[in-house]
Length: 435
Image (cartoon, rainbow, N blue to C red):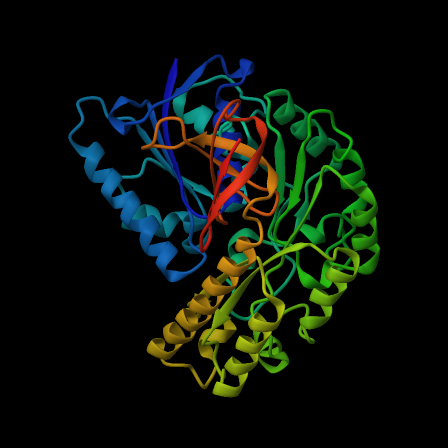
């Protein structure tokens, strides 16, 4: 029995990498069954999957590693300590091994496909085979459909960390999706750096999600299929018409990282869709009049004037996104944006972020208020930590881990179930419901 303590930082794509690693180590060919443990002192293997997208993520990753090294130092039987993901991808294995020698094994992001073999060798296991150990509970799972990114946004470190875009094979993704559904999962969420780039091989080709979706949509047991990380340039009329005709289980929820509304700022960002982002919002709503829209924005990008920011505020007010996240710009070492002139002071970057989040809070509260008294299908994720009988679930317009939730109670409310529930209370980001 191999006992593993794991901690995955950052995005859902990292979570999938961790789940695939753990499942592979526990595959029949490895010669070991595995169990995850809640405390590192009980483990044979401690694994941390890191994020290094922006400075605060780097700091969190380093602090987590250093604290873990200190916790493991005095144990009578020290587990193997392995660290993988974007931190070694950004700074290199050799440099990190020199700076943090307490880590036994560094796993570069580019080597993610051979992580299981590298760890199996270190643990003296037999050759593992692909597998997956879910950590999200019985209701939903992420399905990573590609690796890397073909875009070169001036503020972003991801292409240098994760490399160029590569699509996962459709047949392998269908097999993985079937395995997830066989475990009782009701919702599958497609993720990648750019989901709309799937199928874009060679690198200068045009992505086309439709062949993959034709495989996934009819799968038995699939209640919801959600698409995240949709680049605006990939949301063509052809794809949207296909999705509109698909019906259930496709969820008309569109998560698209617009980043800004001013064409000049978008041009400086090097965004693949640098024209008026209103065009893509209007295109979606032509096909889906009641779509739930989610986006992320950056405030204080170099050169952002009061007028540029005012255009962003007007854009948010006009379009009334269901969900919106805002980042104050961070100058990342090695990116073109970090070397640009007209850097905006940090205080102003954060003030602008807070202004938009205050605006969005009011918009979200207003949007949710219309659901009071309505009956909605709620997918139940997990019991509430503090209130017996109360569970955390989600309506169709709430994506896991990034949006608000629905607190639900009543008959049949169990993790993994879909229940019909009346919305009894609405708030700024969350709902309360009774089945």
